[in-house]
Image 1 (spheres, one colour):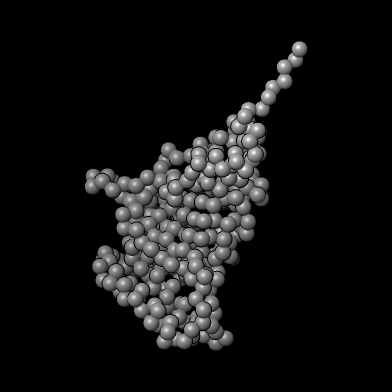
Image 2: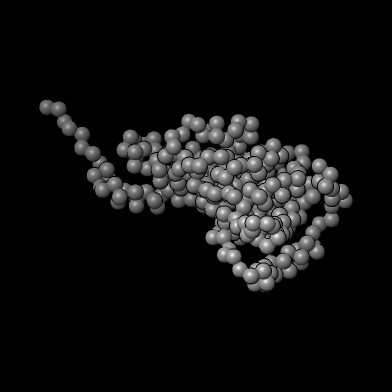
Length: 275
């Protein structure tokens, strides 16, 4: 007599309950894929890419059985940080093997990049990597660590205008990753914040046909220990009288000026393009 294989008691549970149970296993951390170095004798400091991290190891549960794959793929993609270390192949090309619903499930992407990728990034039309299906909680731009120098100051103005139109990203984070930054990483952050404020004021009050409001108002934060900074998207500010606006941004400007007073001095403060 042929025996009939019965499904496991777990698989007989309602799918909603199975997903609730799996959610305790498929946990994530904003710093997945990175290690923090803060020891005095270590050659690098701050948050750096963990070379041993693999996002595929977080997805192994999908290969247990076909039912797990059917139930968990969307949840697993949502809870996994994908660290892209291939700086040569365009990221849309690397993602071309994914189905649209895979892409729309992604929430955290970190990509290791250099000067070329930064130049391409600041010219995104509206969405990260020009992919409208992406709805990211966090996008990490990780500077490639090598003997070469990065020149992010060259792209500051372009980056400000990208932030004024960017959609599909809640938090954009820049991670030094122990890389060589021409003009210093914290100095670049200060210049970026200053230009965000300057351009927002100009486009609200000093241009014909204004005010020109951004898609989001970004809040910024610098982490000294991790050597990172991030900008977080919020609702754009409403149109107010100029004096009200100035009073609102005044504390930020004063804090920015204090930070600039203690910047490291660059013996050659010129950017690579000469201004």
